[in-house]
Image (cartoon, rainbow, N blue to C red):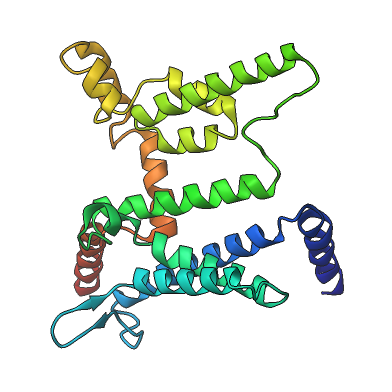
Length: 267
């Protein structure tokens, strides 16, 4: 136990405090813990095995108070306190952690921002899981010290090379976004070869790139995109399993499994 505590202490002081990254680490920690807790909580809410678990906050008039409301309020409070001149230890650390908790509660309902509808357990709600993974990955990369660009100031040639490299990375990231490869594009902003790789691959069939350059203009490419991203493909199934593990299955899938379980129980 003492050895574990020593390792954690050394990591925090040598790798985080030494490089002024402890604040972002606390934000990331709050995000991961709150997202994990709220996902566990919402999965328990709909489970018939734990009927005692508290449910959603709904008024008599039918107003549903989503947990992103608490997340927004928490981020407002943590941000206001940290900027109000009270940024001294341990208040600043508490604010950083609280801000991360607010992010986790808010990003868990990212799909609601986009669709303005309660699609938490629908297929559209899977974007909330993707958003949380992307946010976690970005913060993790920053904590590890990964930078999008390293500007060399030694010579004109070095500056030109850096500028060309940065331009290539930005162009690749934009193409990734147009092709619907969001994770590749965002992470690729920090790890350029990933963005370049994804930019050279086929885009998703419903993306802006596909609508512009595939479809009727290039039916063969459109078919290739549909084949590449078909739900039955192994890689897509693996992605869905990861989403299921992190955030739970969709309501339709859950009810189907529950029905099968009841049938087998009756049999």
